[in-house]
Image (tube, rainbow over all chains, first blue to last red; front, side, top):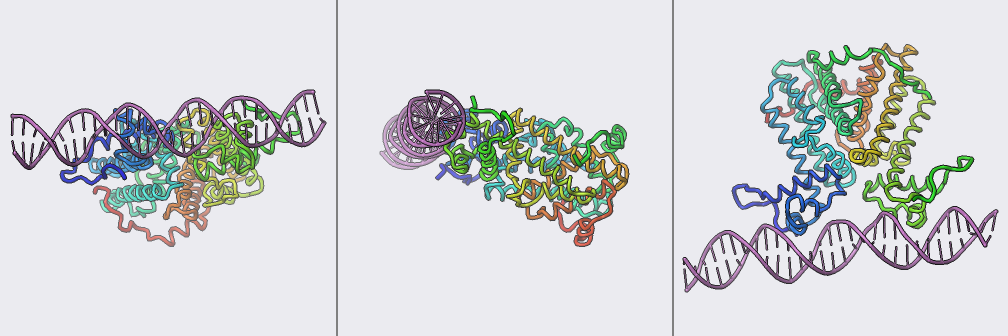
Length: 231
Length: 231
DNA sequence: GCCGACTGACTGACTGTTCAGTCTATGGAG
DNA sequence: CTCCATAGACTGAACAGTCAGTCAGTCGGC
């Protein structure tokens, strides 16, 4: 089918061209959307002919889902790298929030926000993509749980159910990232940060940080003018 | 451009045919995805010719974004109808969770889950869709806030910032619905319900319901075997 | 006869994929 | 070193299928 697989003889000198295409495809998916991405576009962006793209990936679908996988992987790697260089629960959690809810880190790893929407849409309808996404989700949760578990054993925070926290917090971050990605005027990057950290502080018994102080200080503590729920 | 607009002379006998097409389009978007939906498919489903669909909507894009709007509206109406018939904060919040995180209510309003993914993806790239989505989000938040505000005035719950809660809870529900829609093995509908309600109980000072009891009774309260955050 | 709903047949543009063949590098034989 | 063969990267041009949108015209009610 495809010209060559990913199998390399020795040295792991993985094909540069292939990666270029994967990166270009991921960028284009982010910009235009999954199904609005043409092989001709990818080809042009890497300075090659459409035929060469097919030569490498055999089929358009293979290219695009490959790009999705590639992005997931890059995100995961970036997470672990960050964690290796960051001590302290609070700092680590902060970094994780930044990694997911950063507004427009286009050159950064997490910044490919539109890509998640397409990943979800694709996973919803194609079992193979769904399997990949699930795998990523598992790793993501266990990354969060790992941070918490580390903090528990080092007595930074009291005993809590790390896995339980990870599941809820991951879900919360997903929701926040949607709003940030869609440029919601109320939930911007800063507000997202506050919400995520305040939740973490409360759930993990962390000392209150600037997030909690900012909110309770700035906001009036009562419901303003919201309409009745019964219209 | 289009054959006729939505403007009707009298009686509000809104075009049945038009609605049929909108419904069919929404269904198809859910099943296949936004850009995999063909006018021919919509036409076939309502038993008409593709030309007629164009006759009504003028353009494919008009049809599909119309279908998105239509679904948003139906969801909103269903929410308010439910609230009108449901007394009590707890029950109301429960219903809201059900409305968003129901696993497969295909004949139900909220059940069109794949549709949200496409709505987000579309909103991310097309300002007009983004405006609609934002409007829906606002109404959704103010619905939640309304439920809370009602409960505060009726002394069901202590004084809280209803708007603040609404924002966070809405975000949490978004995240949960993703997992439920994608059939995550860990976050199924039941678990989503537990997480949402437990958060609400804690944030609003509600008495603990079965959700909180179930979790703390079933789960071991310590981190199990999750890997270290530093791999 | 008019008008609006409706259609079948068509088209023009787009685009994934194929294919025959070019160009370059490598390496072994002479 | 030169020559040829082989392989692999790469391309231009064509092919084939798909689909949104057009149009001329039909049909039925008023």
